[in-house]
Length: 309
Image (cartoon, rainbow, N blue to C red; front, side):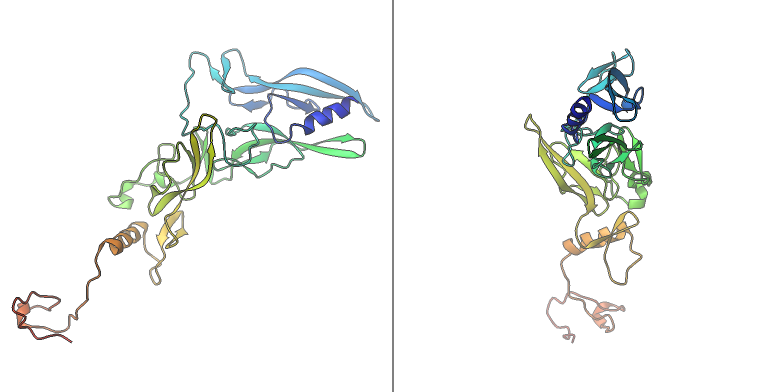
């Protein structure tokens, strides 16, 4: 009966973040479960199967020591509590709501029944990854697999900076002279965004705004917080289908011009929109009205010049 109760309790918590969790084999004791947090054993459940006695620990994610105190689900050093910028760390994420209906923080760990969250998104440029070998619990003829998942950077292209996953060798690492006189906005943690980088935006004000050379923010998710504030999940991508992705940049797709740079393509695209279409005249004919040079277009006040064909 005890193992049945334990199994049912676990199944009721699928896909949630825990303050208290059941820990088969008591392997989580002392392990990190968040920033300045560790698991501590608060109780043990003993039962016997057909082979030998077993123990399941009930552990709680608590602050690492008395120098920290809990605030809004986090452990903050006492006398140094700072309010986080909502635009950098919103309370929810419009992807898999695996962290108790709120945004998963970088390196946060949760218990995952059936190990179904592996590789699913848990934040901007973050996915769940298994951090320990799955544990199997048997209940009669049924067998359940339990994993400890950690929300971490999507792949090796990203690095951890200030609690976020940002692309290595991103656009912000380049010198601004590389982009001519163009001054790019720095919406991604105080730097220029990289291509396909994802951020949160409160209150959804960046949609359609420039985030890089030939790039704009597009909205890929949206939610409404309890206080009525809109939170958008934005992605920095090429501004239109005229551009193609190449080496982390958006290049104007031009036949026969494969060496075009982002600056030149952006300039040509801008000029094509602003400059009126002018009739091109032959430069092979000459006229005395052109004062010893090849004619392109002249002013003829009395319309006496010969009509060019």
